[in-house]
Length: 197
Ligand SMILES: Cc1cc2nc3c(=O)[nH]c(=O)nc-3n(C[C@H](O)[C@H](O)[C@H](O)COP(=O)(O)O)c2cc1C
Image (cartoon, rainbow, N blue to C red):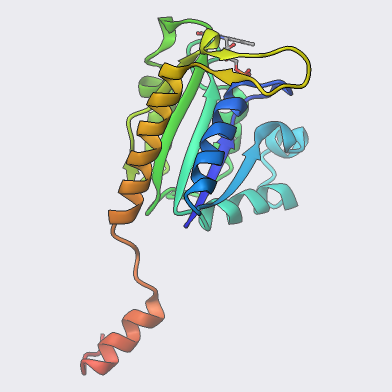
């Protein structure tokens, strides 16, 4: 199964990405194929001018289309998802998340905007027709500690536990979700059953 992780942080040193990297490692340990896409790696011109035909945007669309599920992470900016992530999501086709399970994540400076996942991020993902949206995970900055030197940042125990629960829920949902049937397979079944439409 293929899981795509989207990071909506414009920052080079990103707490959202630390959380996504943790999730990615957990998913890889469960034999999931993963792809991490960061909004800051996209050419700004392609995003700002909505260049649907650019190579980077085409790649985004292809990778998302190939996903069984997505983990979408954003820092809270002004009580919402980042504008950069919104611009990236705007470049996906209608119904881009149809047949996909989505786990939304957000990091913020304080608990004051805990609900940004529910009132800002989830509605955008729903508009893209996510098949199933899992409860979001919100982390405050102090739960993601940067250490001295080159050491990786550390997530606090409570956050790790919540993330692990969400990952289990994501995997369980993926395992039981109805999958779209391949049109060729459907056709063969209809032919074999003596049906025509
Ligand atoms: C422009 C800007 C706006 C922000 N607005 C909020 C906010 O409204 N609420 C909040 O809790 N944190 C806010 N923050 C703090 C970030 O959400 C928080 O530090 C987050 O973990 C940063 O994630 P990143 O390191 O992945 O970019 C803001 C930070 C910036 C740079």
